[in-house]
Image 1 (cartoon, rainbow, N blue to C red):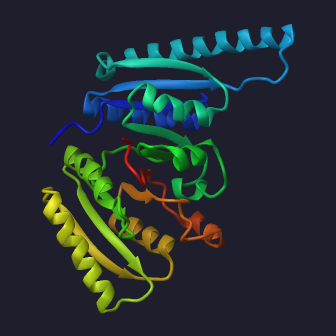
Image 2 (image 1 turned 90 degrees about the horizontal axis):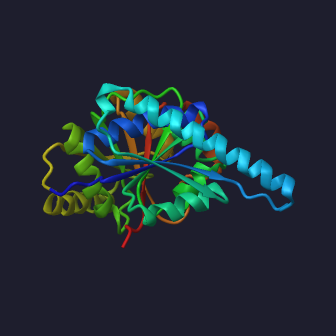
Amino acid sequence: MGKAIKNILHPTDFSDNAKHALSFALKLAKEYDASLHIMHSIEEPYDFTPVVENIKQNVTRKVEKLFEEITDQIKSQKEYENLKVKTHLFEGRSVYSVINAIPEYHIDMVVMGTQGRSALERMFFGSTTTEVVQQSEVPVLVIPMNSEFTGFKKILFTSDYGPYDLNALKFVSQLASQYQALLKIIHVTKKLDRKEDLLFRGLKDYVSEHISYNKIKYELMESDDLLNTVNIEVNEHDFSLIVTVRYQNLFSVIGKKHSKKISQATMVPLLVMPGKPKS
């Protein structure tokens, strides 16, 4: 099985939630012996007067100093002394800088922080993270504040029988094998009937035919509330990672009317796979 992750991108605004996400990015980079790319983007002002240019230069110097402090702190930790860390400074809207950095540095995964109580919750209220998730051609790992990295021992994959679910599962199964994790694949339907049973059996057979990982479990579930079902699964079975595939609009099937319920979501990372893999 080939190495799934060689380059990890961590966009930072130097906030506490970004620093928290950095701890996840570091551990993943070490696990995979991957290069870690830390980036920041300076928003370009519309006013190009000399005063604004001076401010821009001061901001650039400040960011470079912050980069230096981060890399020094990383290298001071024995477990990361041999880690390959690179810093990148961009100009312009953060989301565009992140999207442009992905092909430029051959990024395999983006690791970002979020300010919400949970990754699921934050996705509904608009942020740079949300925009990156919607546009990224590589997986985006969203880290909620106060989550803890203990390795991904149990992974919950929500399938909607989408055409790129298998590609996503191949990536996730590699991640699971890195931690010898249980990978549970669920499909939530409003009504259990013979048709749904046949579709789910077909999913199991299709995955088994193409993925050899032996710690995969399947469950077809009846519910009209996907979010609540995911919350229950995570809380009752201690999943440490939720995985979903983005096709058009993430969570469009769920709808914003459920946003109040998201506050119940557990504080575990959310891995959003692109609906179509990068070419």
